[in-house]
Length: 532
Image (cartoon, one colour):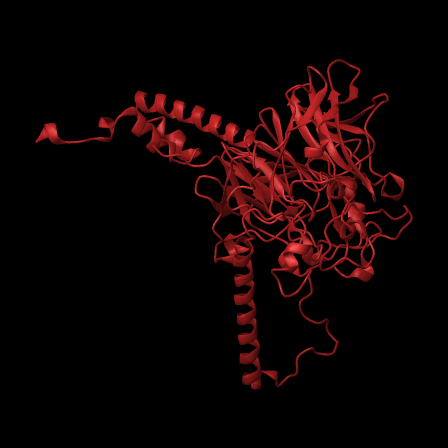
């Protein structure tokens, strides 16, 4: 009978709101708005409550960790990396470049579909950026702006010469194309810097600059006009922050930004906070008072922060005085760019050689699509783009394979079998990374450290928040890591990649310092699920 039929509209509003609240907050929830006026009102209420619950869970340190299930297909899963660039735009998290466990670099672009929780690798046209790490990636309108970065000219410790880039590449989201932007004058080469967008300007601070002797960190402000395609340097009077790299830069509004932490070199770790006011012709720096530093985050030079309303979220162990004092010796030992590059090493901004050092060619196999242009031609003067990569011996050279090698089918089949087993092991390793777990409440797992910036503009002070009650890391918290990326999505934070800390990693692997310390795991920090 008609009167016995039931429809979803017949459900109480509270039940319907709960059901819609289980839908993905990205494309799916937006589609629900189009059903009818009642659903539109419910979706708006769901969005408001979802955001309030997320902010409350962050403030109260009552969070839920969710892990992206690993894929068995290596071609649809992003490679393990650290010191990559990442940003959020329109329901996707974009990731560019980064370092491998052997300090080689990528120039690939990936995007994580936050609705379907799947990785997608776009295949853009145009001029690809160089393979690099420690670049910045920011959003402006419907484009992604990539600036700077660092790489090594060789994977061999005996021939490594670091290279800094001044490339400015723009990825056009609508046309799926990379554009290389020529500017005059050209910007300085930089890596380990920070950048935010204010109006139609990209503001860049700090980092390692090529023109500075001995790789000294910069304390200067660079500005890029996104509309007029031009660079200029803003001179600001003292006082101003010391030169640094690895800092967190937070946009407060169109005219103000914060610089938090960073590192100035060996045994020089900063935990200060500076405010830059960009109103009027004369810009001004001001150091803010930092309260309750005993609750502050450690390793702020290699653990990025992310703004959530009036708080900045850092991920690390609950700090103590010993942890926050100086970089881990395993990191500090690499400031001289010595032969200790492999295994346990992670990126530390390089020390540039003198200006008269010979140019070293970049290995051709590492830049699959990049083309140097403009002021960057010097870094590839010895590479002829018209010359194909040689995969066979030149005429007249001794053959590398015996003429009768095809007859030895047994050895060939054995080699193929070994290669197949190696691929299977690689697939197994890729699946093992997200499964590395530590006991709940372990001191080596990551947890939230919150910096309250609500009074940064009014009273020129910020405050580290103490843990509420009995401090917990949250169920499913991953092992402590550094040099990862963290971006703010819709009602969640997305954490990707990085390097797991040495002590905890050695306890879970048979080869300390091996490639397994670099991760491609994705974690989502959310508010705990509720029921009715």
